[in-house]
Length: 292
Image (cartoon, rainbow, N blue to C red; front, side, top):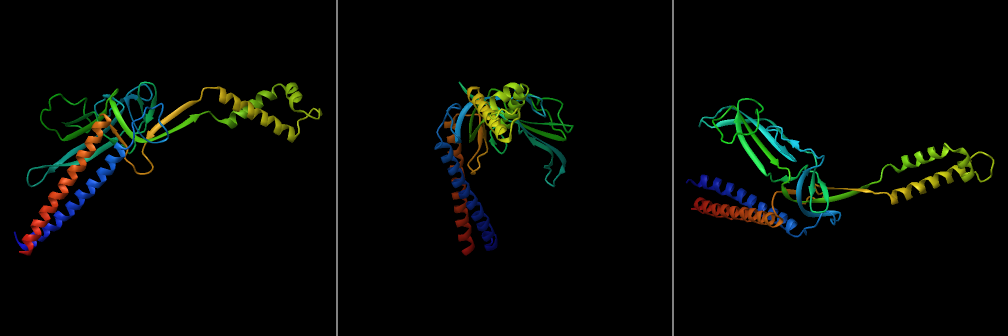
C-alpha cells in the first residue's frame, strides 16, 4: 500500500470510528431511557414518559387492510421498487416508485384498561416482514409461501398483527371529554326561555316583567352552575394516547417483552462500540504504514 493510500484509509477509518463511538453513546442513552422507565399499567399510568405492555387491537374495531397484501393488521409500512437496468457488474438497479406508512392510531389493551397509540415517528419493530417480486406496480395478493423467480417490481411489506403482544415506550397524554361547556349553557338558557313564567319567577328580582342585564347575568351564572354540576355527576370519558415524546427521548413499539427490548438496545450499543474500536485499530495500522 502506498503512503497516500494508507493516509486515505486512515482518514476513512477515523470517520467510521467516530460514527461507531457516536452510535455507542446514542444507543446507551436509549438503553438507559428504556431501562430507567418503570413498567406501568395503562390504568395507573401518569402523564409523561412511560413504558407499557399490552395487546394491539384496532381502534375502530375493524382491522386495517395492508395496502399490498390486504392482510388485516393495526399498522403497516410498505415500499415498491422497480428494476431499471443493471450496472457493469450485472447487479440490479432498484428505484423506489412508491412507499407509505400507516398513521392511524391503534389500541393497546392490557388486563383492565386500554389506550391509543399514535405511531407517527415511532421506531416500529414489525411482527411480519415480507419481500417478494412481481410484474405489476401493485401485487395481486399476499406474498407467496415460496418465492419463485424475480419480477420487474420488488415489494416490501411490514405489519403489526392484530392481537400482537407489544411493549410501547413513549409519552403518555390524557384528556377528559366533557363536551362544549358554552354550548351546554346556551342550550340550558334556551330551555328556560320556553317557560317564561318560571324564568321570571326565578330571576326577575324587581318584578317588572322583564329581565334586566344584571338579572340575565344571574340567569347565565345559574345555568353555568347547573351544567357544571351535571358534568361532575355524569361519566367523563378519559382518552389516553401514547405518542412521540416532545423532549427527544425514544418512541419505540416492539413485539417483545421489556427485558428483551432492553437487551436488544444493549446489544446494538456494544455492536457500535466494537465497530468503532475495530476502525480505530485500522486507522492506527494505516497511519503506521503511511509514516513508514
